[in-house]
Image 1 (cartoon, rainbow, N blue to C red):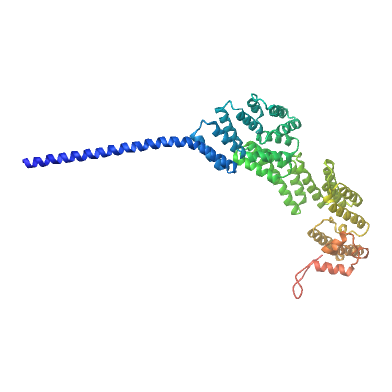
Image 2: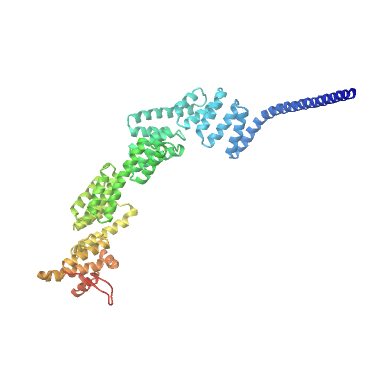
Length: 503
């Protein structure tokens, strides 16, 4: 028992010393680690104080070499280390200004001036930026304490006064005065979207739609979510008659706000006009000329002040009346177009209508006037149309193939063929035994007219006034009958069946 007790005591002592040594090692290690942490902490603080300056230097190097993203990154780190150092914010301002990030630049220079309110340089830079952004009233407040910059101060005052007066004119809807004042103010600014929008509004009401489109394009480029700019730019394109582009702008506005009243109403309005117009175009192509006229008038009546749409559509209506043989009505509508504003297109449409009414001398007069007012680049085409009118006048005194078939001079081959078939059947001698002599003469003329007008080369010569047959007549009675049989039968040669019209 005494031996067991002795062993137990020794084991306890051994365990105690082992634990004590372990605790001592842990304590020794913790103290060392503590010293290491303390060393690195103070070293880091010291390094950070030096790093802010180095970051500014690195930022300046990047700025000079045009690496603006790198410069911004360096200055942001410097600001994080020294947020109260005005120089960091000022240097960031320079980069933002160079890269045209004006809103950010204004924030940076404002912070720099807040930290160093006694800095005249910071104050001057902020005033210059405010002026360039069109915020001249605010710039005036910043610039007042400056000395030695009298010329700049006068510029700021002129800008502020012009803007204030322009806004008064806009409120009173004195668009021309507002436009002039905004022109004056914007000589002092670089980017002022609010002023550009205001001027665009004035230009729109002055019917300067191209000018409005230009200003609004710059607004949208700077602020892609400016719904009112999309709306007004769409309205400007609409007034120019460019409905597709107008619709696209209204759609862009509706993407930003599907319930925007202005864009929604404008989109619906223009789509309504286009729907009627397209129905009129389709009816015209199908030969339903009266339907085409009705649809086009419905489109026009959406807004009779919309001259960029009204005028070209009225010319379509003139052509449709001519197709219907309503020549006097065609002349009446063409004169409306000219009374509103004389144009080459209007005069040529009137000339075509007058030809349809067999007023050939009047048509020549209209085409001659079109030549007189046509731009140099369009003279040649206008002169060709005048020459054709003079040929028509000459032919009206001889044998007029278009008149014989009862078609317009610009009739399509389909229209010419249709007229020939109708008239040939009507005046075939077998159907006119009571007045066979007259029928033979008309039947001969109808066949001759179709033979000339159905051939592209012969028709071209005829339209140019060149002789095709002596006295414009070279066919014969036998040829007219052969020509009729060739065009009024179905089936091919050989032993195939033939279909003959029965009278």
